[in-house]
Length: 297
Image 1 (cartoon, rainbow, N blue to C red):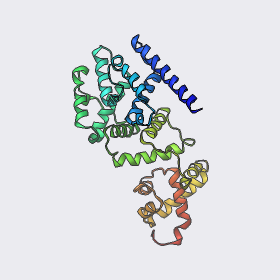
Image 2 (cartoon, helix red, strand yellow):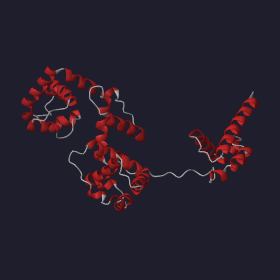
Image 3 (spheres, rainbow, N blue to C red):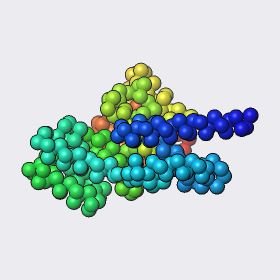
Image 4 (cartoon, one colour):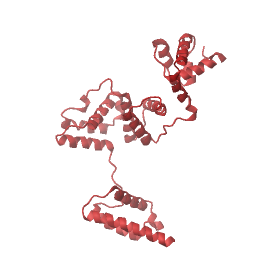
C-alpha cells in the first residue's frame, strides 16, 4: 500500500512537471496553480526535505531542467515588491502613457498628502522622495494637492495603519485608540450603519493585523448599550438625572472608574454634547451605586 501511494505521488509530480515544461517551451503563461506548485517545491527544498527523501535527487534533477526555461533558478525566492513602490511605478506608467490617473490612484495620492498634513512622521524620507519624483509626470507637486477639511478621519487612520505595517513601524498611540473604537463599532454593526467601503477596509485591517473583531463576553454591555436606543424614556431619564448631579460630583473620577474617555462628561455637562449610548449605560450603573461611596463627591 505504501509503495502504491508513493507511485501515485511520483506520477502526479511528473504530470505537473511535464505540464509546466510544455507551457514554458511554448512560451505560454503559467497558471496560478502552476506557480503555487513551483513555490511548494522551493519551500520543500528550503526545509531540506530532500534529506528525508521527500524532494528526491531525481525530482531536483528534473526541476533543474526548468531553470533555463524559467529564466531563473526555481530555488530562488521571488522578489517581494513593496506595494508602495509598485503604486508609484503604476502612477508613472499611467502618466507616461498620456492617460489620467484613475479614481483609485487619485485617492492613493491624496491619502499621502493627508498623511503629510496630519501625521508626517509616518512617511519615511524614502517615500517622500519617491512621491516627489512624480512631480515631472504630474506637472505639479503632490504636496500642493488640496486637503479638504472634511477628509474622512477613517481613511486617515486606515492610511496610517497600512503605511506603518508596510514600513515595519509601530502604529501611533492615537491610531491604536481609534482602532479599538472601530472594534466596538464593528461588533455593533447590526445596530449602526457602517458604509460598505469602511467595512471592507476594517476586514482588510483584520487580516493585516491578525485581529479578532469579536467582542468578548465581558463587553456584552455594548450590546445592552445599543438596546437603550430603543428605550428613549430611560435614556432621557438618565440624561436629566446627570444634568442635575454633574455640578456636585468629580466627573474625572467617574470617567476613570467606568472607562469613559477623559473629558467626555465635561463636554456633555458644559456644552450639551450628546452622549454615546454605551456611556449612557455606564452612567446608569454609576447612578445605582453612587451613594454607596463618597469617593466621587
